[in-house]
Every structure is written in C-alpha cells, then in structure tokens.
Length: 340
Image 1: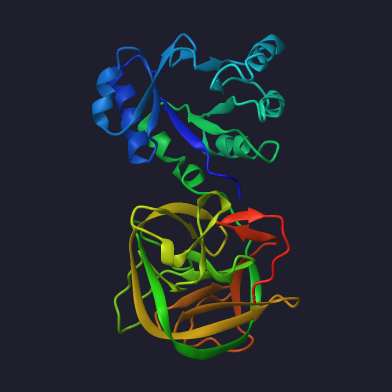
Image 2: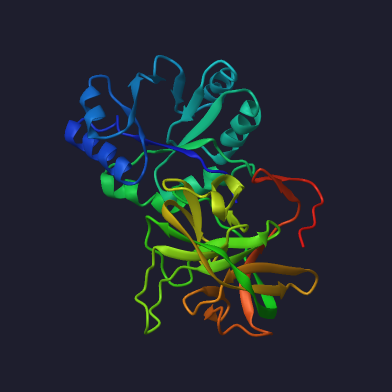
C-alpha cells in the first residue's frame, strides 16, 4: 500500500479564465485543495479553502517550486541540480519516459526537495505513484476540463490496493458484554466494502458496512459496526488506530472485497455496551482473532460474498489482510511481536 500523496490541480494552462476556474472548482469538489494558477487569478481564493500556487514562467510561489518540461538530457540535469535547493520540482507533461522520473526520484530522495509529476490521465498517475516503489511525492493533474479532474478520484483519494487473503473460520463463541464501536462515515459504501479491523495488527479482518437490508433493519451503508474498543482499524499512510480513539473528522480507510481502498472521514462514533463474540480463523499456519458484536447486521466479506457473524460457522471463509512486524503508536515497525 503506497503512502498518501499530495495532489495539485494545474489550472494555469487554459487562456479562458472560466475554464481555469472550472478546474479549480472540480479540484475542490474532488477534495483537492491546491491549484497552480496564473498571476491575477487571486479571486479564485473565494471558491473555497484552496492554496493558490502562482506560475510565473515556470517559477511557482516565488521560486520555491520549479516546473520543468523534460525534453532533453540537459533539462534533466538542470532539474537534478536543484536537489536540496527548492521545496519541489514539477515535471511537466511531455513525451518523456519513466527513466528520467526514476533518476529524479533517486536523486532527490532524502534531499528535502519533493518530486511532482504532471499526469493527464489516471493510469499515468498510477504509474508515477509506483515508480521505484516509493513513487513521486505528488501528482499534478494536468487536464483540459473539470470532468477529467474527477476521473482521478479513484486513484488519488484512496491509499492504493491491499492484498486480501482468505482465512478459514475455526470458531465463533460468545463472550461477556463489552463496549463496541459503530463508525459512521461521510461516505456511502457498497456491499463487500467496509473497514479492516482486528485484535492484532498482523491480521485485520474485512468487516462489511451495513449496506444490505436484512428485513428487520434498514440498510445504513455509511456505517461499519466495527468491533470492540480495543481493536485496530486501518488508517491512511499504512497506520492503524484503536477504534476507541477515532473522532469526528478523522480519516479512515475503506476497503472492498477486491482490496481496492479509498479514504473517508469519520462522521461520528457510537460506543455502546453490547453482547460480543470472538471470531477465530487461520491461514493454515497461524491463528488470528477479532471481537465483534453478536448481531445479524454485522457481516464479514469473503470469497462467497458477505456472511453475518451470527451465521458464521467452522470452515467458512472470510477475507483479511495479513502483515508481519509490529506497531508502535500505530506505525509499522520491523519487530517481532506476538499478540494473543
């Protein structure tokens, strides 16, 4: 899963000011709060909470950021000479290949200068985000209209794909009452989509949102009945949070049954005492667990679709994300830790 990247809309190219404004507005509607504009476009600041970066012939924000069109090896050398001297370098769209980008990423790594790449379509952006594994520090969306800006949301709003594995259920048994957390997000989720939650950071189960009617309670596709207060939940930047510490407005990662992710924000959390069950499952080597509310509406995603925790039985298959190492204040560390 790649780290979250900065995103900027390039709104300085069209000569028509109305088109430049449209690009800024579309960026804001897509959650992008920075735009490259022309000197004189100060009134765009009234469109919303947006950082305006003024482009003066390739010098942006008074020279803190430099925009380059890589057409020759000399252009590459000039860009590389700025490592550690400016805040960021932006590589403009042209016929350059990924090799110069690899060179710049390698050269600027740990230099204090960030590398951004202009992308004219989502697939191009995805390639740049994965170059040399680390990828660029950010993407500049360089398109002609607002509709094309919105096409990037699937790649840039998310945190990349995660690998899900199928675990076999060993047991589901009742335990005492406890405090469980319902996480209501600001996003509508589809069947199979939810949050990655678990009692250990090494195994996060895919708990589906309440996106399906059950005949008794109306669907609430914005909600994930995620589990007990002690559990970890996947957050952006590859981090985890405790369910108990989530607060309104904070970001969480939503994941579907194919491992595609996107970022949403918490609308509210509800912590209530409810009857709980402990789910235990295995990959054939290790045993993993999580604790959930004993309720028909709590479902897990698996190869055969969603299944309610109240109907889970030994031998059923559910999806989870496995990882090695441990966690320190939610950050992954290379350390051997057993959580049982």
